[in-house]
Image (cartoon, rainbow, N blue to C red; front, side):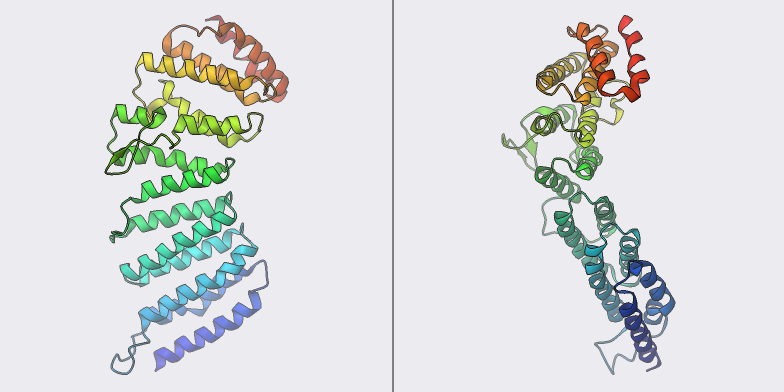
Length: 348
């Protein structure tokens, strides 16, 4: 009885404080403080459970689970109102961590799994919220740490997350967080598939996609170089850096000095030559009508320099590089010194 009375008092105190802070912008900070002071989890975890012969519905585990679930629900309207408040996200994670340390693995896993579904819905409403993307990464990592396997799915977490980035990118090409997440998943995905060099190259630019178990050929699936090419062509004059950063990540495979962590780090000399020449051709075609986009000039120059350093000669467009540098200086005068430093490299 002492145990239940202690919990009842703590619950009553928490409800009162919840009413006081629910309309405030500092809700998350005050609510964390009130929860820590109220000692709800301590009351539920440290005190002995009631006699099971008296009641089977109330016990430390059930109370902790209810506290976590109810508070997660309480935070939802606050997160919709203040989606970029650090403390709300931090407190939500704190609640989930309590479930991990105080509940059974099975019960805690179910709570974390529901959270992954919920954060997916939240990102569908605000797909570029970097708080949400960081939170999703944490939730996925926590789910992977559990020993319980989801036998209802034929895909592992990496495959599912990679597919999720594809979905989010297709709904919004300017989703920097989705492109960044994709770049961090690719190497892990290839490692888990035990991909050899040929498979890595197919992943980069051929028409082969496969599940974790069965190889399939799907022409309608967009490949990495084709995906980013189509995204860039959608609005070549866009100042959206996320697309160009991802393109830079992909073409790093062609540079021996930077390809250690690329999709295909062991391309042959001939393969690198063919890739770079194709990229230069595509970018020159994109430049027609998009002369005000500095990123095209910058990438063209970078690819020409990579060609020179890795192949040992200049591409046939060498005479255009000085013109591209001049245009780049006009478009980006604040970095004039950086672009002028490229000129001496053309003499080698």
